[in-house]
Image (cartoon, rainbow, N blue to C red; front, side, top):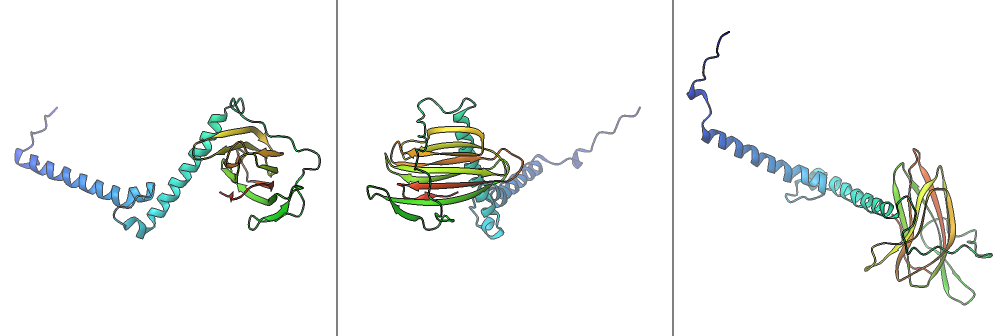
Length: 225
């Protein structure tokens, strides 16, 4: 057994050399972080190079998807396996004669304008969205307190988890009710307060599911995904 000879001190890097190498590595890491990682992962582009390389757009898309996923997960977590939380307001069943009219707009462009028996203007839409596996999307209506909207939706290609909820500037989340593993639902949505009221669907199947929503009633803006 032979002992290795001790290295010549002259061959070892000096403290100054090690410090210089460490500083160079740190500067390079910061440059990579600022130039490539921040734009690609978070949409933050302090140098502008990420925008030129298309990395900023990639990061912005990632952040948007992350925000949407967080909102969707928050909704589902707040519901829990037991269903709607305490204080949820049940959606009224559709009474006889309150079904949505056939022949309403087949797109989500200009709505069909009608009147109820009292002369109140009504709007109607037929909206269709596609959900990839594990994808969640929502559609909301701008409604005033007490406004009523007849609705029905159906899913083709599989069942979905479903939540009917509302929010405004002072209310982050208000649930009207939820169901798991269903393919259709209809009812009359009565707005509990001024704000946005609508539907959230999550596809937990392995295939694409198409959801078709029909709405008719007293609402303004229709917000799409």
